[in-house]
Each structure stands twice: as structure tokens, then as C-alpha cells.
Length: 438
Image (cartoon, rainbow, N blue to C red; front, top):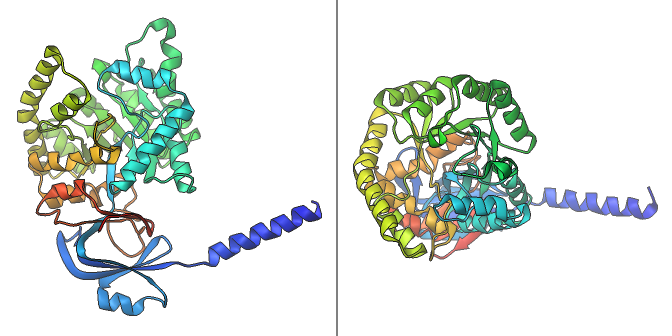
């Protein structure tokens, strides 16, 4: 090592030590702070933050007395303060409309570099709307969500904390892509890991782990094609061996049952779930991730903003809305009555004209209220419960000592009007102010 190299190394080490020794303290004053566990507001609360963690929560005068000299004060005394929001079913590296040709254009027509840049834009917009943590459940290319996660963690780009699934595990043929067999394989392999045997199932889990997956996402029943019981069990066993959770896109009773028998950790969508299957989920501690953002005319509102609907398209949306107006509220009532633990996911992977990705994601809150969920249940589904679903209950989901200082604030009262969460005015992630419109 030359003398100049030694000097450079010494400077780098000294600078790193100085950064490590620096402490930044923030004292936040909340007019109303939501205790998500108790389901009640606490008045005039203080939150002491050092670096990126919460150190103390309590009456403002008490916390202020414990704050170090020179602490920075953030006055939210006229606001309602809640934990940062969590989207358990996010797609940040897609911005398409509903037809499969558009998915094909994304997978086959966008380079990996361009797609990750799109993801960076979507991640920033999610964060600015109060989503401080998201679980990306596929449609990210081979490792786009993992690369985006790492870039955010390193401070290269702004965005929420990310759990990445990398490629979805599916039966042969992937999901939502009908392709010329002569050119299909290279395209499908960019988006999916195809499974046709237990050995292939185990290999797929290991391959996703190699590329940085935090958990495994399975598609159990795409288009009437099913993973077998042995394949599903092999996926779950291999994932759990590596301490990774497994979540499953399952809409049919058959796909749901195969997932439950295999011992997965959560079910996405669950359209045709039976009461018996709900009881099994409750008894096994399996989470239900409710994905109903487009209920109550929201699909039509999006579609009419995106394009002029043909008579056929308008008729199809009308038929879907009529069916869902009966089935979706009944399904949500059965989920709540069963005692199953549930969280909320947006499944937002569409361009929504006039809205950022974060604003579009937040439409799920109004939809869940119209489906019959109480506001405190909705807030818990996007904070406390969501943190438990993704296995991060020790770091996010509540405003408590030791957790990341991920906080949001609204001007109004979300327990009176849940759509206040569509108008988040203040966002903090890890003690850093992302947005302050108060």
C-alpha cells in the first residue's frame, strides 16, 4: 500500500468514525397520537427520536424533560399522528393497464435498468403518501425489487422499507401471459420461476434466495393451472428452512386448500375461500391479505380516466361490479367473523391518471371502509397487523420505544373518516422528514 493510499484510508476511517459518533435527536409533539394496540388516542404526546429509532413515548412534558439539549422540536400539536403505513401487496416496478398485452410490454419491452428507474419513481411516490414500508410481491423482473430495496437502504434513492420477493413461483407458463411457444421461455424466465416437480420447487426457492429475496411469493392457481401438493410443500419446507415466509396468490378453493395444507404464512386475494378454510387459517395462524382497492366503483373510475371504454369493456366492468357488490362485502364479513388475522394490500400495479402511485395505493382505505371494516381495523391492517404478517413487528407498525421512527400525520381524524389516510400531510421515515404539509 502506498503512502497516499494509507492517508486516504485513514481519512475514510476517521470520517466513518465521526459519522458513527454523531447523534441527532428529534422531539415530536403530537396533538393526538393513535395507540394502535389500544385503539384509542392519547392527547398531547411526545415522541423522542434519536438517529432513526424511537427512544421514548409519553406525555409531552415528561418526554421533553428527558430530551437532550439542543433537541430539534417538530410541532404537530394540531395534528393526528399514526405509525407509518404498510402496503402488504405492492408492485413498484410496473405501471400498466389491465390487459395482459401491457404486462408483456413491460416484461419483454423494458430493460432491467429502465424498469428499476420506474421502480424508484414509484417508491418515492409511495413514501410521500405515507407508505413507509411495502412488501413487493412480484412483477419486478429477476431481482429488480431487491436492487431497489438495496438502493433505498443505502440512501441512493428515497423510498419505503422494502421486502422483496424477486420472481414469483408458478406452474409452467407463468401468470397472465399468453405467448407464442417459440419465444415464450426467455420472456417468462424474466418474471417467473416455473415449477413442475418438488425438486424444481426447491431449486426455485434457492435461486430467489441467491438473488436477494426476503420471502417467497407463489401463484397457486393461475388460469386453472395448479401447483401440486408435493410441489407446494417442497417450496414451503425449503423457504422455512432458510427462515423465509411464504405468501400465495390463491383465488380458487383448490389453490387455497393446497396452500393451507402446505403450511404457508399468508394468502393473497382468497376470492373463493370457504368458511372451513377460514377456520383452518385461524387455527394455523395464517394471515389473510385483503386486496380490495378497486371495490365500489373504483375500477370504473380508474378505467374511464385511462381510456375511452368500448361497449364490451364497459359491460365487463359492470358485470364485475355487480358480482363484487354481493361477494366482496360477504367475504370481508366472513373474514372478520372467523377470527382470522388480516392485513391490507393494495395490489396497485396500474397507472392511475391524476394520481401518484402513493395516492393510487391509498384508495384501498375508502374501499375497505365501504366493505364494512371499521376504521380502527383498517388502520391496524395497514400498521400493526401488517408488521406481524411480514415478520417486522419488532421494528415497524406502532409508535413504540425501539421501533423505527416511521410516522405519519393527518389534519383530520382517520377514525372518523378513514379517507384522511388518502391525504397524509406529514411523513417521517427513520427520523427524517420526508414531507411536511402541516
